[in-house]
Structure formats: C-alpha cells, structure tokens
Length: 359
Image (cartoon, rainbow, N blue to C red; front, side, top):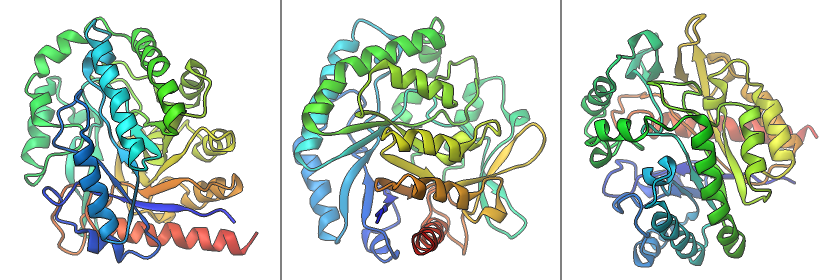
C-alpha cells in the first residue's frame, strides 16, 4: 500500500503565525517542510541550528525530512569564478542535513525571482483572496513588482524575496545580462556534477522546483517549464538523486503541460521524490491565473487525475498542499495561511483514501 508522507510548509516560530501544534492537529499530517531562514544564501548551514530545528519539530510529534529550500547563490547560477566555494559550502550543508535525517532538498534554479505574482490579495467572489498573475499588470520595471510584493506581504518575508537579495536588484540584472537558457543550463549541469556524488554518499535527494510561472519574464531565462526541460535536466546527471519537485500548479500554469502524464513518467521512473499539490484557475485566454482551493471543480486542474497518477505509480514520497487562499478572517503570510492549506490536506487525503479503497 502506497503511503503518502503528507507535509506542511512552516517558516519557523519567529516568522510564522502558525504553530507546530496547529500543524499537528491537521489529520494525516506527519511532516513539516522546513528550512533555516536566518543563514545567508551561500553559507554553510550550521549543525547546531539544524539540530535545534529538528528537535523543535520532533518535540511537537512531527518529522523533519524535507528541506525547502537551501537556496543557491547567484554566483553559481551566473557561472562566476567564485561559484566553486559556494558549491563546496552547499556540499557541506548537504552533509550536515544528512546527519540529522534529511532525505530531500527542494531547490530551484530561477534567476532573481523564485516565483512571481502581480497580486497577493486577489479578491474572489466568495470573499476570500489569494495570489494571482495577470500579465498586463506586470510593470516594465521589475522594481515596481518588488515594491508591490514588499508592501502587500503583511509584513512577512516572502520565500525567494529576501530583502538583502532584492536590495541589489540592479546589480543582479546586470550580472545576468549574458546568461541565456543555454548558459543557465550549463551552469546547472556544473552544479549537479559537483553535488550529486555528495548526495549519493549521504542519501539526500535533490528535487528541483519548476519555474513559476513557466514563462520568460523580464528577459530572464527559464529552464524548467515542461516535460522537455525535465528530460534535459535528467540527462545532465543520470542519478535518482538528481530529481524533481513536481509542482502541479507551476507546471499547470501552462495549459500545454499534461500534469498527470508528467507525474506518471517521472514518478514512474523514481525521479520525483517531492510533490507540491495545488490547483489554479485560468482567468482568460491569455492564461492569466489565480490560485484556487484544491477542489477540482473550483480550478482548471483535475486534482483527482493528479492524485490518481501518483497512486497508479505507487508514490510513497513526500507531498504537501501548496498556496492557499486567505479564508475565515485569516491574514497571515499571503498564500501560506493555515485554514485553506489544512482543507487542501483533507481533500487530498480524501482522494487518496478513495483511490486506495477502489483498487
């Protein structure tokens, strides 16, 4: 019987209004998807901080086996001579995490922006609000969207939008000026060739997250948008430790992507140890979208077919609900509230139970 390892992303007791006790009360949830948010990108994660995080989570009756994310320094993505030291630091972080039972590291290789939305509080007809992307609201100047995110994030640091990084946005754009998709892919291969032997030694699997949204923005290259990109990344280093996070929402934001088919292919060959399960709703023919509750009928993705694809492949890896709405008066970190993500877990577990009983 395939056994889902259901998790919940948590930003730590200092920057998350959701407590570990709240998470433990969500039925079927055993994992916390965590990270260290106070270690500068590129530095080694100290063992004592990893140990403290693990101890805190386990004391609440939960497990810490997935880290999201150990962010990759821009010098690695750009391919600067300084990248080798940052790669060595990354390898040591892998060793340190392995010592405390970490099995999967979710990461991305997106230049500058880890994800992009034009509205953090898109109003829905039922009175809730969520994240949305509308291409015609994307300003020509990236600083405008940075200011918008900063001013509408309810005082929380959004993942991938750390202030110290975005403070150097002009310098970063200049540094990426000569990095196209080919060059970014070459730099990813260089990175993977360096770290995968360490991953194999430590039994820690890398799970690359798709580009979000999966389209070119501000002239920045994107190299994980679809099945073809995944095949190219897979070929960069033929090891099960070079794997993918299949984010159904990110891949689903391109309607040409057959998400259940992608799941069957890459989960089927054991290259996807981590799943982000979420629904999105297309708003027009231009495929602008907003996040949706997980229920299939409220979005544009068939979550039953997505879960069935996982079930057909006997998926027994890690999964978590992704971006949720703000509902019931909650006003926390946009996209990462408690209530709607908890409802998402209940729905996903319900689908899974039905699939199990109808085998």
